[in-house]
Length: 190
Figure (cartoon, rainbow, N blue to C red):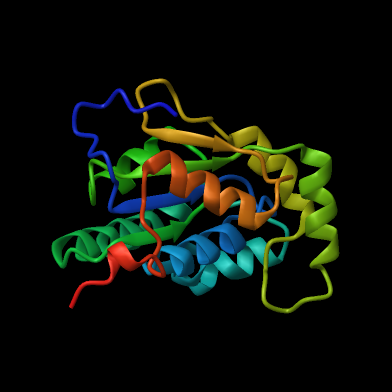
């Protein structure tokens, strides 16, 4: 794990599960939040209607399209931090400037970077084409892979392989950050 930032707390209060569409951000984020007893926020729920329609039509979003969405996510991170509510956020966070904007809400946030085989990710996206709960078509995977700027050495991140099971990934994150799960007796406080 990279954590050279001097503002890093040993236990981050904000975890951003990032990566391209289809890598498992929502599944891992929800499972991790449930295991830790943290709040989970699915970042896609804060996209504006115009952006959702654009993606559903197979058109990639521009930086301008993403700006308001990222600001809304940053504001939610700020709110959670202000109320001492630990947060797991699923968000593509493809570019460094997007992650910098999110860090305005919590400078100590940690990134969980799901970095997997594009063929596996495309296959997963193909499997969900029958579902109506996701608007990102497989045709946009190439643009996401092209736009992806992996976290740099000065960012606090943990690279995870989405080929691993969600349970294994959740335990890996929990152990590396030394987090106590909500079902552990040590974490039960009035």
